[in-house]
Length: 132
Image (cartoon, rainbow, N blue to C red; front, side, top):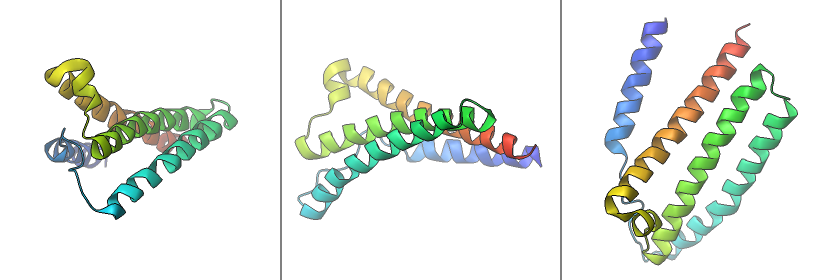
């Protein structure tokens, strides 16, 4: 059973790496995309706060450690989404402006990898804790 999960995880990881694009969302003149993008930000912030509150309420037990990793993964993901919304609205790529094009690309890839890694690690911990 474990080799199947490992093969599936590797397949999903590499397919996401192929599909991930550094450029973020394309600019759109569509008002719906603009407002939907702005609406995303408060929900991201709410989910971040809620995930840390839940992790804290579990007091670091086996489920709490997994939830804490998920919360950190969600935080990194939210920062990336807010960055994409800023780029979508203003046309300014903060990572490239602050770190240069190569550094911005590396930072973006590192953030994506951190998000996937923390989230996967959190789910694995929760899965293992639930199997006891």
